[in-house]
Image (cartoon, rainbow, N blue to C red; front, side, top):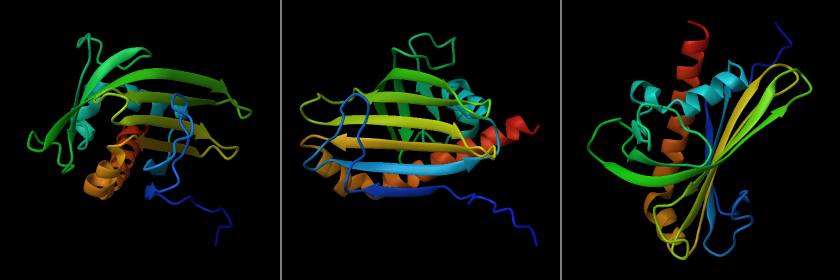
Length: 196
């Protein structure tokens, strides 16, 4: 029997009543909450980042956000300071029915050299679908690799403002399921591309 512990493969997803702070909005209070999902990916952080930013590949693997509109559709890739629209399927089937359009601004792409020769990344998407006074949302994608070469993809979105309570009550549970699905589909897509 091997003493090496294999990390859990299923994505872990939760709704947190104590919201996580985000780079732009910081710590939030009141009706704020966070949806978070974490998974292990058998690929480099760079490969995970590539899957996340390559929106042209979303129709092939992403059943939660099957398509994204970019200002320059020919680029097929997200970049910092780009305003884009997610076509969200809250049923997670990647089909036109149930699609919701969400405007987001990719505000950040941070890269850091790690001690083990790999890179870690932080990508931040700021919600732009509602006025800030009504609903603030910010999604953070953290991609890192530990000393054993295990890559972790950790994504969370914190919602705040007067409408946050309604988001939590009406779609909070669905968002937890869809974030888990997003993580697992991104993981499977990345691993298939990496090991092909």
